[in-house]
Image (cartoon, rainbow, N blue to C red; front, side, top):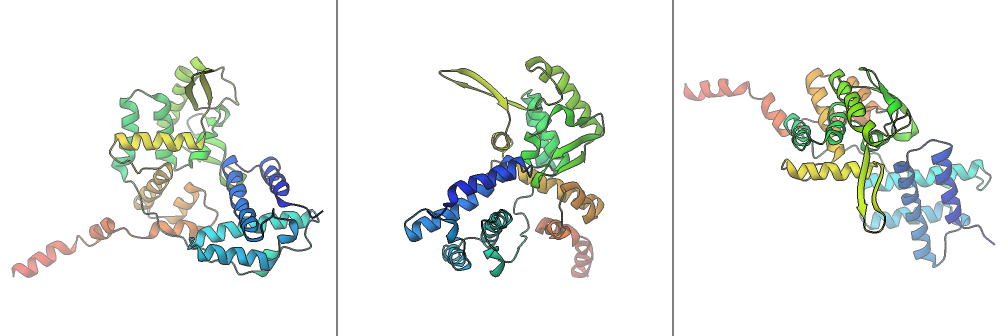
Length: 313
């Protein structure tokens, strides 16, 4: 009987999580992208996908189907790249003779500048709103997002052992299953240590592997439940405070863009921004060099007096 892909996809995801150290959010993305291919085969051929369906012809048909559905170029590129990684994994395990995606054209990579970049006032207002509500956990989360530009998943995975005095955060798990040392303003680190001693230690037995941020919710049958926060929890928290400060569309990743623009405007050094955000390639960071209309207006402000004088004369 021809081997079906559903079980192999789960094995691939388990490999990414347990042997490659990928974050849970990244593994979910892998699974989602591969499930789109499985769904395409099921709809096209009326059966479950098999390993024999991993051919250039079938994969190209999938790409053509996505193009016909007007999916974004980057979405198509990411899905094809995920399938390519899956096929390469199968090649190493003798499931395939060669990677069929290698024979296909890859959609070009387009880095679009962010459409929402909150300014300093908005990012500061987020922290002030958490302070006004007397929520030290929320203050700590927003301070980290506001002064480091970290992704929400990385913030959610922070543990006590990541705190390094007043220097910052050490060995933080970031995108791609890698770890990074992230500098944090010393006053923010002092606040995090105070939060650890005065808040977290009163509600949890604190050890090196204790999560910094916890979520509590109630259910009718089992009562209150506590668990370490997830990236989704932080996304929801950001939306709640966004509505409070009058910026309901605010998302955690917008703060990452805001920090990047703030550092770039202050130091005019793209390499510093790349290092801060942890980008592997400088061309990914290049999107922040796109000048927004308010910045362009400020750049041209020196003409105001000259033009006024000319028209007056």
